[in-house]
Length: 256
Length: 326
Ligand SMILES: Cc1cc2nc3c(=O)[nH]c(=O)nc-3n(C[C@H](O)[C@H](O)[C@H](O)COP(=O)(O)OP(=O)(O)OC[C@H]3O[C@@H](n4cnc5c(N)ncnc54)[C@H](O)[C@@H]3O)c2cc1C
Ligand SMILES: Nc1ncnc2c1ncn2[C@@H]1O[C@H](COP(=O)(O)O)[C@@H](O)[C@H]1O
Image (cartoon, rainbow over all chains, first blue to last red):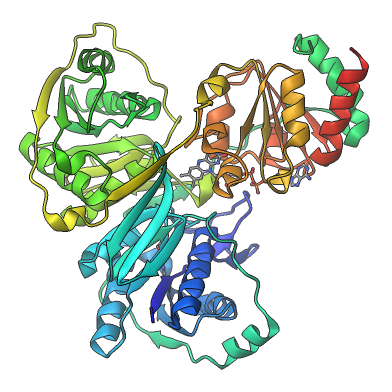
C-alpha cells in the first residue's frame, strides 16, 4: 500500500497571450481560464496508477487562493482520495515559501499518522517556472529527490524512475520515502468519469492557513515582450496554396 | 569570482554552456573584471582541447571534479561539489546552463545554501541591487527578479546568448578536485542509461532546409508527409518539445532552447505555435514558411511567409505539386 502526495498549482491557462495585473506582480486572470500544468497532470496520473496497483491512496495538496479549490475538485474527480488546501495569495510567496508550507503539511500529517511514501510534484510550474519547489521540499524533509522523470514505479520499499538524460534514457532506484519531480510524456492523463465527479463532490477539502510568514518571491515586476510588428506574407489558405509554395521553393532555389 | 558549471556532451563542451560563459563574461566585465572559473564533472576526452576551448571562452581556471562518486549523474552530489568549490573559491555567483540538469543542480545548491535561485535568465539589469530578467509563463512573459543574497544562483536560458570567443585566448589552467560526498547525496543517482541511437543533431544544425512539426502533427503517425517533404527538399525534420516529450519523435530532432539551434536557408514549421523557447532555436533561419491553422499563432506572425491551413492537407498538396513539376 503506497500513499502518494501530489502537489498541484492553479495556474492561468494563457495559451501564449498574457496580460499583467496593474501592479505587475501577476498574470491577469480575469480574461483567461485556470488550469493545472501538464507536468502535474502527468504526476497525478502516475500517482493514481501507483495507488491503484498497491491499494494505496492519492492526496492532493495545493497552496493557493480560495479559487484553487476548483483545481482540487477537478483533479479529485480523476480518482484522488483526499485534498489539502493551504489558502494563500500565491503572488506573495516565493518557491522557498511554498516548499516550506508543503513540508510543514507533510510533517504535521505524518505526525498524525499519515505516511506519504512518495511525494510527486511537477518539474516546473507553468506560470512562475521556478524549477525548484520539489527539490526544496525534499531538502526540508531530508528525503532523496529525483528530478525530471516521466515514469515512476514503486516496489519493495523503493522507487524506480526513468527520464530523459543528457546521453539517453536514465533510470534511478531510490529508497522510500522519496520525492520525484515529473515531466509530462510518460503517462497520458485520464479523463474524469461521471462516477469520479460524483465522488469528488463528497470529498471534504481540508483547508489550512499559512504556517509561516512568507519571505516573498524577490520579484521586482513582470514584463511582456515588446509587440513585434508582423511582416508576414500569406501565400494562401489550405491545399490550394501548394502552387504558390512551390513557386517560393523555386525562387529560393531549394526545389531540386 | 563567478563559478560556471560547464556541461559536457559526447566528450565535448555543451553549446549552451558556452553561451552561459558569454553571459558570465558580460557580467564579469560589468562587475569590473571578475575572474571566471569553470567546473566540469566526470571525464573529458581531451583535456588540452577542453582547456583551450574554455580559455577561448574567457575561463581562467577549470576545476574538474573527478572520483567514483561523479561517474554517473547525481544532482545532490554534484551540488555538494559545487557547494564546496563555491566556498573554496569565494565565488559570489554560481551559474549554469538552463538545461534540465542545470536547473536541477542549481536548485539543489539553492536548497543547500538556503538562497534564492533564478531559472532561465536571459539578461541582467543591474548589479547593485543585482537584478536579472528571466522567462516565466512558458516564455510569454518575463520576470525581473532581485538576487540579493550571496552567492547569487541562476541558470541562463538556452540560446538566449551567443557563444563568442575572446580576442586574446590563453588555455585555462586545469585543476583536479576530489570532493568528499556524503552517502545521502548519492541515493538518487543514475543507475542505468539507455544510450540513444545515432545522434542526428548534426544533420539538423547543418541542414539547408528543415521541415518542422509540432503538436499539430496530432500523433506519432502524423509525420509522414513532413518527412517526405524534407526528403524531397534534401532537408531534415525538426520538431517542437511537445513532440519529443510525448515520445512522438526522438529528442535529437528537437529545435529550441533545450534542443538544437538551427540556421537553415528555409525552415518550414508545421503545426508549431512558435513559443519563445522554440523561436530561440529557429530565429536564425534565413526564411521561415509557417503552416498553421491559427493565423494568430506567434509563428505565423513572425514568419516570412505563411500558409493558413491544416498541415495534414497542405503538406501532402505541396509534396504532390513538387512531384508534378519534376
Ligand atoms: C524551460 C523550457 C524550455 C523549453 N524548450 C523548448 C525547446 O527547446 N523547443 C521547443 O519547441 N519548445 C520548448 N519549450 C516548450 C515551449 O514553451 C512550447 O510549449 C512548445 O514549443 C510548444 O510546442 P508546439 O508548438 O508543438 O505545440 P503548441 O504550442 O500546442 O502549438 C501547436 C500549434 O499547432 C497548430 N495546429 C494544431 N493542429 C494543426 C493542424 N492540423 N495543422 C496545422 N496547425 C495545427 C495550433 O494552431 C498551434 O499553433 C520549452 C519550455 C520551457 C518552459
Ligand atoms: N503553490 C503551489 N501549490 C502546490 N504545489 C506547487 C505550488 N507551486 C509549485 N508547486 C509544485 O512544484 C512544482 C514546481 O514548481 P516551480 O518550482 O515553481 O516551478 C509544480 O509543478 C508543482 O507541482
